[in-house]
Length: 158
Image (cartoon, rainbow, N blue to C red; front, side):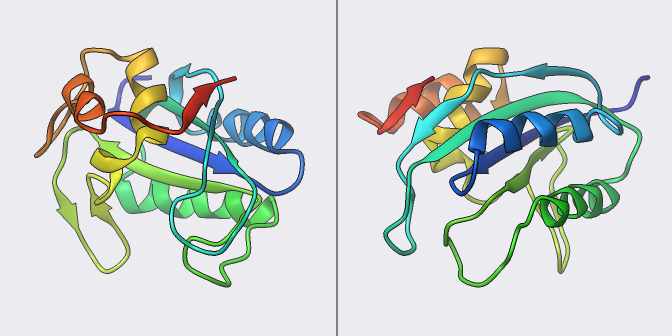
């Protein structure tokens, strides 16, 4: 399948996070082809209440879906895995974010691309850098330079 190149970030800090991420990646493969998947990374939560560390990963692949269709599919997977949206930046069984959609700038009521905080999140940049070290985040620059600008971070490869 050819299509649009997408960068998707996943995270989990409730339940068996490794099993949840693995299952979600398998489910995403139903509509994203040619996936490259990062290692899993452990990261401290950002914002929100006191909560367990997260397990994170990034996948890159191609899809025929439009950006909002893709978002809807990803949110269905979140819901099927017990995702509850009670509080901003609260703990969750599964969080799936569309980080980049074919280097497209997009803003609608339900989606902003690229992801508005991806450039400042080591738990997105580190796994992305692992699988595509030459990547550029539109409007922000190279993943390598963005990661370097963050300095010391609390993210470890598992």
